[in-house]
Image (cartoon, rainbow over all chains, first blue to last red; front, top):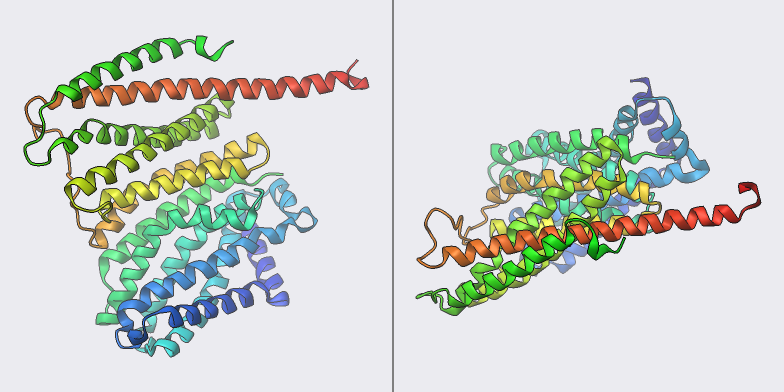
Length: 221
Length: 233
């Protein structure tokens, strides 16, 4: 448990002092908003509720890949990754620490991006803020659990930055579909539809277990 | 040992080639479908390829798990061989499917549940092979690939749930057994399944042999270079 806290604290403090990952993710997702808005058909503002959930989660996913790529690249300096692997600590807690740090950063970026989306497409998230935050959290959990696992693998491959999206995107379909449908239902009716939430919960649980157990095998000197 | 003389390779090769001939004759003589015409004969190869592809993906996950558990290189070679042969069969399935679809549904592709899941699974295992290719050190690559292969397998039930939620229309036939095959179609279909399974076994055995020889050769090269060093004597 101490290991978990130490890793989480270290990652967040490093991020607070440098503020490079979260800024990069934020700027990137803002760029995605602008690009998507300009690429979308002119009348998109009118039926924004139909299109925004998908666009929003595309922005979240790409931003998360950007952030996760840095999560372990950070540890390559001074061979900190090897030191982590050799530490006598339970690797599960190392995983939880890294994943939680990525989750916190992604959550901050999600809040910022949603604000930008709301303004760009004229959507008011305020009345559904609580459930919307819950959907974002569930989606981010799925992205960050296997994302952290694959990030630890990708950083040890030849084409680090290229490998992570190749590994991650095909597995993200259940997370994306659940999150997009839930956001859609929420924006349309103001209440959370249960089936997509159920899908998100199941997917998060499955991915969480796989990532927690699999992490044991991917961390090495 | 020459790969072709590997135990089991000759036997599976013989069985496979025999089945190819039997299947070709049976498929040729099978009745022509009254509604779909001759294109319906893709039935005798397309679903069997699908069984083979999923068998390959399943074997990849199971052998990967065994490798992580036992740490024996042989399991990793079986996993790699099944993944490659699975990808091959899946490619062939993804070629025969659209041809049949164009002939009967009128378009090459539909975002049907089965098609979508198979395509995603195909992409997962392509990423699996890329991961192996881009990871330095065979032991590390084997570990990473095993973890990824298992994660890829867990995706199938989740995707079924996810895509039904997305309202994926289903136009792909659900099952072919249960007497839905017309008279005279059962035998060539059964032969097709057996042929693909035998072909799968044959290719996996051969591919395993290649991987084993490669590893042995790499080990020999390392030992030879060590022998040249002064400290070895």
